[in-house]
Image (tube, rainbow, N blue to C red; front, side, top):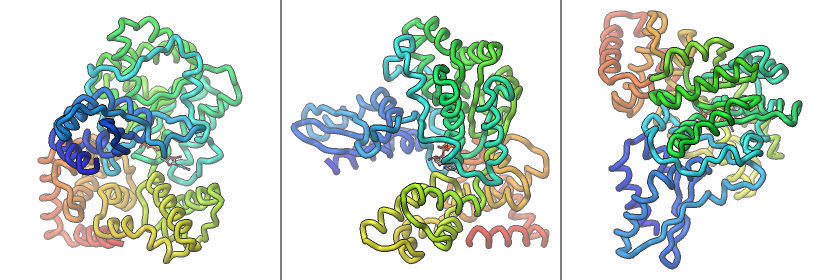
Length: 464
Ligand SMILES: Nc1ncnc2c1ncn2[C@@H]1O[C@H](COP(=O)(O)OP(=O)(O)OP(=O)(O)O)[C@@H](O)[C@H]1O
């Protein structure tokens, strides 16, 4: 079975774009093979549905070819992630180093994976808010204090203060957490409220389903009569005009009825590629707030809080050690914490810095060897006192354009990424733009001592 899965993955890697492969195929696990039946697990319901409709036929064909016999391929939820209490919120995990997301490759006209029966699912809106993601479990620091304050304000006065409320920031920084927190609070205050959390890609699929079934009346009725709509990762609407049109109507209806809309995105409204101008101006008509990558103290606080909620005592030294080495986002910190806990439990050892070094050996050596583009963007943005989001924005004022070119230069110097990959991580820019930046900064460096000094400082900081 393992051999088959390796062969099958290798084949799919050839057939798909790198983004599609890492978003949809890489997270799959071949669970078992018995009596002509192969079970493949997906990490969450969202991925499961998509893989079933988009790739099941191809994987089955490859299995058939491999075993030279008819094989039944079953796609199931990963039993490890299928926790009974927690709702599998449809939040896809984009590639760790990718900001643009895989769904730009997903076709709007793709067949919908699952029956979307809005009219017959009265509790659907309730089930979408993940009750674990609350304000209480959300750690605040400089990077997110404004966002949290706005979220609380809106949770206390939905539909009244800022409408829409728009959060933007890089991967794993807590945007999803924050909008669930708002949903949870409003649900607690107004138990009858019709609140719907939805990932933008699911919304796209709902539009497709409504289109296929000629069910736009139901669709409109459902979305237009919500009390609160929480929509995650709206950049996935880019280039999907029918979805944008439907969303525009829903948006207008909800705002006119003073129903709260909360939106997240990986970048600020004007920078979302392929988004209709009318929507962009609507997104900007309420309050738009950034969530930045967590600073050191906040990373420490997050680790201490999360360890504490696991019933584990983390010393400050240990927390500082981890926070100093892992700097990109909160999801990465959570992953590291899970590894540390598993390691210390398995070996029956207390959590010391040595144990942490051992538990995170792979992660730390990768960090040491390979500096991530995300780290470069954050470090350069901090250094020049600009927003990280400006690294992937289309804005061009000199105070932004130059740091961005420096970051591209460092990305080329210090990582293994190709020019097109770097371009992609800087807001989908063309490789020639990256090449131009790399050449320009390399030349400046030879001519200008101050520029050379700045680069030197940045390189030292990044190499840690
Ligand atoms: N400030 C915070 N305090 C506590 N936990 C946090 C905080 N920020 C993020 N997290 C946790 O980190 C993980 C990733 O956060 P989340 O999914 O909200 O990120 P995101 O910004 O929506 O990322 P993506 O764009 O990848 O969807 C979640 O488990 C979340 O609970």
